[in-house]
Length: 375
Image (cartoon, rainbow, N blue to C red; front, top):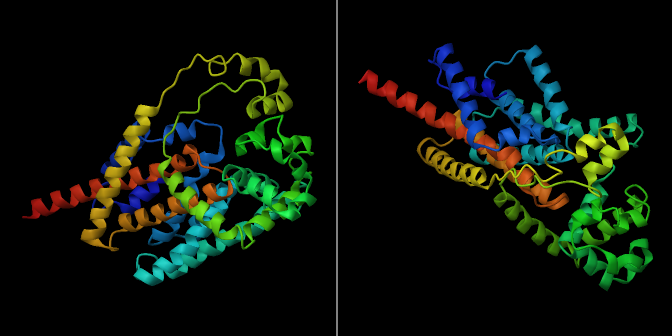
């Protein structure tokens, strides 16, 4: 995906040999200074988050895209988008936002025909996802766990405790009996085997009750604007959380990974318990790399901003960078609102800024050299 994008955004008079060289240089720099190698080496669906964005950019900005290639890209887009519920929500918000930006700034590089195509494909995800869940016996719903993550978020921002302690209608819910035992952290609420969540039946048993509580909090006059304010602040905080590699602590007895391995892969439990990570022998510290990456990202944001001042919306690289900025914002808003604030949610997509920053500098340098040679 990065290679295809690079062939689109680089100047047209480059030889194939030089194009391949620039792709390799870009990949090497990304592996050395960005969170990309950490993201692709972690057993989480975060590895797929940036891919639907890159595929969407290929569809939007490729001048001539055949039907076969478009079909293959569309299938890949759907598959990668469906690997995490936040991808679907973030992409939907992104293309809703892009229509306003396209109309407001009259960005001719983004064709309405292609924008409509990728937007309809994104809306189709909301139908495909429930059908897949129905196929696997989870019912016709987008996800079976949204209510748990939102309740955990309401615990983190204090709204759930406030609701249970002050509202009369809260007494009708089973969780009210445990209001003094609610943990301070939404993470502890979801993952600790001593949590009240499991005392009251677990994830699915509480679905109807938790959905009713969420509705009473989010859509009430008393809490709605407080919730919006908290979500806005948390989105800003999420955008500033961009480190990586800091979560290599042991996951021993009582942790979610060990519980899943004990449940599904019991024969692997000994190897898991004896691993360097769970014995505390790794000692990885990625704080220096995180600081380096964040410094580079800030520099490239300044470089790309200067490019906008000089060239406006006439450069494909700059318009792609703008779309990427919007996606990072949408991703931060979705994860901070419906899940929690965490470094991995941001670093799984911010490395794309480095990609476009490198390409803009290479492109700019080639154009300067070409102009100098002509003179």
